[in-house]
Image (cartoon, rainbow, N blue to C red):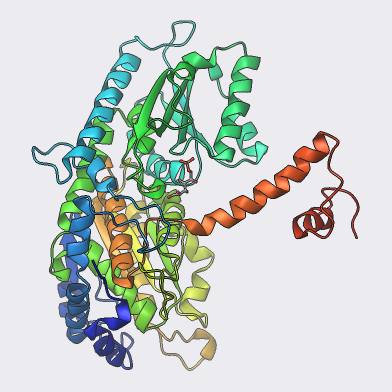
Length: 539
Ligand code: G6Q
């Protein structure tokens, strides 16, 4: 299939012309009740309030045309049906299907891609049995006691999404259970987690799709050592999630092995066993199944052609409008929900690793911007930190806010006549308005230019189901943007070069340990090690 570049689509020119006079959010007449109430898109349990974006009916119509001309929904459907979307035509590449959506298409009689959904279902069945065995005392520690903790060892996609979901849903944990994470090869990461843990009551979930990631393999050995030092048998504590047939697929070393498959990219793997084992342990099977249900609902909603009824597609298009046409370089994701404390970190990987590309799917250089820089922190904390720059700085930063009508725990207090939750939501909506409208003032220091585009994604409560939907809404947004930019959102060659050079530098350390290394002459790696004071003498 020959996909076109964004700037070859006819509506690209229309949008370029419209971008010379975008809607003025700061005009006194701009934010009418009609505008704010009609620019709301609802799907999968969320409402996207987008009246505070610099768009009008003409822009929306052109964005709809852009989506149609770029076959955004058709490409998404092809991806779900098993088309080989992870490829660069004519060049060596991963050349794979992209089927993370199949991990949640597991309860319908006619899944979109039966083979992948069948494999996901089999893993879910294994997980069900494993969790039942933990609950009914068939799986216990060496002293016959139940497990109360789990440490997940993994990095990148095998850490960020699962960790973000765990934090988001900690309110729904099975009483008495907790999870910790080790990802960084910095030994202090593992040391800080292991200090104070009761290893005897703790499972270790080693997660690596490739089974070959040096950080994870090293951390696994470090943790195994801690078990041996404590006189505990790792075989009773360690479980694995890995690619079937890969280097870590060695059931003799693990209490139980779960599989994920090469058609699921690491950063899209939170709904596979990569997230499933840990989330099933923490929330119970029902909680994990709820996450899958929410994600599946969002995947179905993403097939809607009308952008006004498809949150993922609309967010993708608004992002393209702000980035490619209004030339905003970064995007802040600011959730007003403490549970989403790690969500921006997950999105940084999911979005920037997917769409940080500069060639199209035929290997040709692109002359337009692709993925923006993504960053963010939960509000209201951010308000007391970096919002100054968003309001009055020289860089325009579009914002995606997210919030929920109700808190998770329901524990609250009325102070000065309002509850905490009301204060949180008032702040969220006030920020949205303030960024859009700005403020006139004779004192330039108190002047706000406004016209900072933003939208608010509002849900009812952060639950396993809504978290699943939110995760998939973003995954699908990222895929839609990649389709329209005509890039391959599913590979990550950009992280390989650094890995290769790290391996070269490690050879120097290994050589020194064996007393063999004499240095690398003019080789920049050796010179940098010297400059950093790690080997030999400086200069
Ligand atoms: C994600 C990337 C990357 C990957 C990690 C861990 O899409 O591919 O972040 O998840 O490098 O890889 P393993 O799971 O193979 O250890």
